[in-house]
Length: 237
Image (cartoon, rainbow, N blue to C red):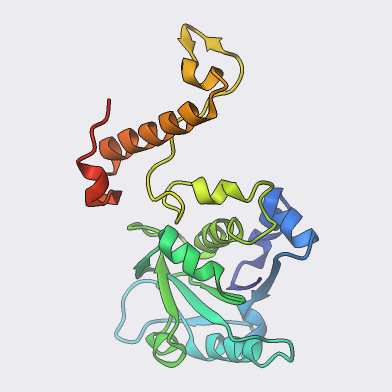
């Protein structure tokens, strides 16, 4: 899967791309991430890509020409596949695991990272991007949001995780729309807190039942909105 990131701050990404599972996925050819400096598509001698808003007001607005030229240039590459264009915006549809699963089915995703007061509206009118928000808050720019999207999507790409069962059991995933159960490891006791005996029993059937019951209990307590009617009325201890 290929990600193209369009940003004014490409230097924010080398550290992120060189770490952990993402770096391993890139090295193994499972994921291809390319970072593009929007200023490379500026026709201004000072490489300006923003200007003051018509009608006045604070801040600057990203200009339409370099953004459209950039996206059209990426789409015109010889090796280009049909892309899914995302504009990261607090006004977009809310990112959740359903959306992540949808994006993981794409061959290529282009992520437009905004700055300042955002993009000229004609970027949206002409390119018709999929506007996505990672939450009801405002960031300084879309770069961190782009990292969030990539981090969540790559987990669903076959071969990225060491155990393919991992993402199926994640909270909100298709395999488990409920919150995950608690996890424990060594030591067996710490400051008077022990590990539930069932996890030490070796009885995998009982362990699976315990984990399912704990997931249901936690979800009822914290995110009952995730439960279908068949779970809402189930008793929990």
